[in-house]
Each structure stands twice: as structure tokens, then as C-alpha cells.
Image (cartoon, rainbow over all chains, first blue to last red; front, side, top):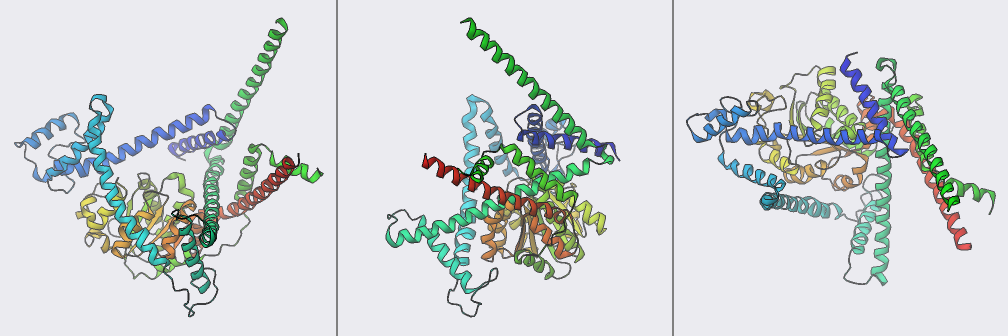
Length: 288
Length: 281
């Protein structure tokens, strides 16, 4: 077995059992695993975002190799940047198949302005970049929600409850019963969120039926959440079982012994300290 | 108070760490000693299978990977089974990622299936376009002009030099979309910004926690079926006739669920006894 695979198994075992150790109580093994996860995730995200988007799609459009001309101002700046980092700005322009689009200077400037939030005296500049992102996201979301979640879902719930060509009852496929459930559930669920009139009489009864539909939905969500968590636990245990084999030098067992041993010893020490401190306080009380 | 009531009260006040140990045991034991409980495909999983089967040979399928190692046990078997099904039917597979970690998850699945099992040729049978940050903006970009967004693939090869990219300019050029999703951005964004506006059929494999969010799109016909969590992945493995990690995890899943249901029942009995007792005194 390759050394990297072996090392990976030991690190994975340590981090998994370190995270699980939180179920006993908060401890340094958990902290190490948690901090490593946050740090590595942030670093990976930053690096991938830069090399898959900023470098090819932003710099690649500002300084494309296709239009390289060292006599122009743009490429004079580029050559200065290239002097500092030839991997980001390779000699002769960035060859990612783009034409030159200087309009991409706007997102570059807005991006730099967003980073200005790190400097308190210039932090106001960040608002421009954030305003652009918020505006764009709001516009995109509004369209998506209206089209798919409002119109699409209204279409989906507009069922013919008197379509007797369908079977009267079927659990999973379309049936008169299922159409009736969709109809009643949607109307009553919506009425529950109608707050302009007090929920009394017919409205009260309908909204109560709506609550039951919502409760069933929450129950299903909870069931699926449990199922998801158990699936993830199965995944981790499958890996731990694999790493407990002789191929991986019994990584799981050794790491488990180490972590349980250290936590057990720490718990024992804590108990002794508690006994000593309670004895001290007894002496203090007697002296008083 | 009867002895039975005392037992239930004691169960109700048990240290939660004992419950963790019991759950760990009921998950580990079936993994070590498989029971082999039967797996029956649900209608939603069958719809996904039927949709892929109905595609004409050589169809262009966009496979979007939007999950990270944290949900690998649920999503990875789906992605692997879907790739097996697509390559077995000789479809062309275009892989994109909306999640940064999705790129190496996709690479891992492609190495196993496309290279290891089917000996498919990169650039002719499959391509990994890779990750682009931006969530729904990326989906919109793929819908309007994929070449503008992905001028190079994950290997930094220009898309103009990739033969299977010749006929692809935007989302409408694909025949089918499958999204293996663990959250935002993912399946819902594909429905909202790609499948609904263009009418290109799509299916999805989602984590269990997302099923309730995604199911309305399936029932309204905006999506063709869904693979729901690890059971969905196991069902798809049984449908394509190739068992994998999801199938082997299903025994543990079923036993753990039974134990959790038992805990909930016991906890409720204890709660009601305690409430009755506190009202009495």
C-alpha cells in the first residue's frame, strides 16, 4: 500500500474519532479536528475559486493571450503583474480561449471594493460591491421563485378532483383520493397562514386541518433528517471498519485506544482535582 | 407508583451518552454481519431509471455534482450508479460542479466508473467541466451560454479542443439533466433556472434531509422522479443490477431506524408518566 493512502487512513481515523469524541464532552481532539476542517475548507474554497473563476474567467478576459501586445497600457500593467507572479499572469497573456472584454474591469473594481471592508476607513466602499451582489441575487431569485415555486406549484396543485377515469384509491400513483388530499391540504395549509381574519368558525376548522397537514410535513422532514444522519454515520463507520484492517496497520483501533486513553486519564485527573478542591474547602470551613 | 412506571421513568432520565453507544452498536453490527433485508424500488426511483432508459442511444446528459465528502455516503453511490447506467447505455456525459468539493467527488466517481469499469475516452465519451463559483448565476450561465462560462475544462483544456463539446452551446443542447445534490446550490436551482424555463427533463438524487423540499417538484411534474437519500441510492443500485455501498448500508439503516422508533416510544411513555405524576403531586 502507498504511504499516502496509509497516512490518509490514519488521519481520517483520527479526525473521525476526534469529532465523535465530542459526544462524550468537548475536548482538544474535537477542537483539533474542527479547526482543521474549517481551515482546510476555507483554503480549498479560496484556492479553487481563484483558479477556476478569477484567473481564467476574469483575468483571462482582461489580458487574453489572443490580443497580447506589450506596447499597450493594458499589457504593460500585465507584464508588471507577471513579474510578481508568473503562474497567475503567464508570459504572453492568459490563454483560456477568451477575447478581450475590458467591461470586466467593473466586477474587478467591485471585488476590490468589497475587500476594502477590511480597512475601517475605506469600509464604506464595500457597500457598492455588496449592493451589486444583493441586487443581482434578488433579481435572479424573484424570477426563479415566481416561475417555479409559484406558477409551477399552482399548476401542480390544480388537479381535477372529479376525474373518475383515475382509480379511486392508490398510494403512490395519481388517484381521486390523492387529488382530494392535494386539494384539501393546499387550501387548508394556505388558510392557516391567512391572518387578516380571526381563526374562528369555518376558517378556524379549515386552518386546524391545515395545521395537521403541516405537522405531517414536519414529521416527514424529521424522519428524513434522522435517516440522513444515520446514513452519514454508516458512511463514517464503513470507513472506520475498513481502516481497522491489517492493510492500514489497524489505524482505527490504535487511534481509538489513544483518544479513549487520553480522555479517560484526563477524566480521572479531573476527578482527583475535584476531590482535592472539595477537601480544601472543607478545611477552610472548619478554620472559619 | 408501580414498578413498571419506575422503570420507564428511569429510562427517560438515562444519560444520552448511553443512547449514542447503543446507536453506534446497532449501526456497526449489521455492517459487520449483514442481514440482507430486501430492497424494493419506490415509484420515484423507478421514474428516474425509466427516464434514463427512455433516452435514445448517444444522448447528451449533463450530470451536475453538488455535494461534498460530508454527504458522500448518500450522494456518491447515486452519482456512481447514474454514471454506470449512462455509460452502459452509451450516452455522452458532461459533468459540472456547483460545489467546490464536487470537483474531486466527480473526479473520484469518473475514475472508478468511466476509466476503471467502462474504459471510456475523455473528451469523446465524457468530460469534466469542473467547478465554477456563483450558484444560480452559474446555472443561468449554463442555460444561456455554457462556452462563455466554461472556456476551459477541469484539466484546463480549452472546450473548443474537446470533440464532444462541438454540439454544445447552451443548456437546451442537452437531452437530460441529473443533479446529485446535497443542498444549496443544487437541485432546486436547476429546476428554477434551467429545467422549468427550457423544458429539458431533469431528475435528481438528493440527501434525505432535502427530500421534503424537492418532492413537490416531482409531484407537479417539474422533475422526473428523485432518488431519496441512501435508500434511493440503494434502490437505483438494485434497478441497474449492480450493488454498491448504499445497498450494504441499508441493513444498518433499517435496524437503526427501528431502534430510534423504539427510543421515541419509550421517551414518550416516560414523558407522559412523569407529567401525570407531577400533576398528581
